[in-house]
Amino acid sequence: MGIARRAVGALAAGAVALALSACGRSGDDGDSIVLHRGNMAEPLSLDPHKSSGTWENNIIGDMFIGLFTESAAGEPILGMAESYDVAEDGLTWTFTLREAQWSDGEPVTAHDFEYAFQRILNPATLAQYASLLYPIRNAREVNAGELDPSEVGVRAIDDRTLVIELEFPAPYLRGLLTHYTTFPVPRHIVERHGDAWVQPQNIQTNGAYRLVAWRANNYIHLTRNERFWDNENVCIDDVYFYPTVDNAAAERRVRNGELDLITDFAGQSLPFLRQQVPDYVRVHPYLGIVYFSFNTTREKFSDPRVRNALGMAIDREFIAENILRAGEIPAYSFVPPGVDEYPGTARISWFDAPVEERRRLARELLEEAGYGPDNPLRFTYNFRATSDNPRIAPVVQQDWQLIADWVQVDIQVVETQIHYSNLRASDFELGDGGWIGDYNDAYNFLFLAETGSIPMNYSRWSNEEYDRLLEQANRTLDAQERGRLMAEAEQIMLDDMPYIPIVYYVNKSLVNPRVTGWEDNIVHIHRTRWMCFTDVERGQNGG
Image (cartoon, rainbow, N blue to C red; front, top):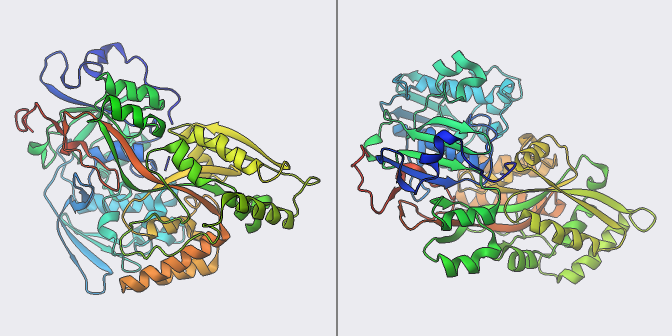
């Protein structure tokens, strides 16, 4: 879901005493409890309706809370919803909201939720992630400009009662409602300031923290929101998020005590880290996949023979075992293992063939497609600047060139923000990417290949039977039959290969053992409100 231009440098002079002092208690007065978090990349936006990265989610989810939120274990729990009721047909959900305030003291109401859903689905907002909300009645049509935003199936009955109507039963809705695309926004602030509403001097939040400062490519500073409904149970007073592009530098900063935690490190560093700081290392299964996208609007990649040939040639086992080296699993399906109520039967047809045999078949497919010494296959592979991606790129370049000497591949590193922007704009030939499940359901992966999921459907692939099966699955109440239909759809996608699955993620973090409240979980979401320090007693600072 995809970086900043450089690693964190020296902080502004006025912030040095706070931001680079010892972790935990810091600041000139010694009273503030501070957490320093490495956060992979520089955010493009902190507007919940204009964000799409996990690093943005880490910050936004500290500031805003939707109807549901995540527990420390990453599981959906009640957030702004105090209670809810689901109709027998599963199509109508009615929520009673808790009494809560924005950080400026204005009440958070069901009307803020109604406004937020209409805003994100309004095509004028240009929300990159709006398609995630298409299970809501009329959401797709509103987002396409075919209906007025007021027709979205989300309505406030009164200040504390919100009704969401669905196109089809969505058993994963609780998980979806933890996602930032479903967060309320303060209508009184957005309408007053427009797109500038998220600037530190304007923004108002309903979560545990509010924005104090954003120094681009340096740090983002959040401070405790005293009006948060559960403020008395929050321990950390201030949290700093730093873009940590350089893994080696980020690892050193944790070992030196400058950062309390980072949410990724280089797999090749794992043996060293386990030797040097064993109590810091956290490696755990992750609901995510590394995959490559073909731009099927380009003639060379409109042919499934070409796409399959390039998919066949990649030695996933070598990448997992020798490049990543942290327990990643070679991927021969798009939906990761362990997804709730999903059979996981779909597989790439050639998954068990030796890589040498696959490369021979790849050459034959490319020759069938008309490529050879007199018509070489040339393309550019773009990849993210972050994590292990620069180490994977020359490996896959060589894998492809081993098919034949007339397969000619250029590789190009791109800043992560720009890379994902290019993918969404279809401005690429072949590009890497990662997808982390927003909720634990196979549809959250498979929707990426639906015709109607552009711009998140980076490949621009379209298949009527695939779309039909997913629509049928989404209208099926029986969980086993629903899973079977989605697996049938996944097999169609794998056979046609608009995307190349590479490996399933593991989450790799370094967490100072002084930090409490961090629980490894499959969605790799860790909200600051649950964290504290072993030498800090909750409640002593208002938390």
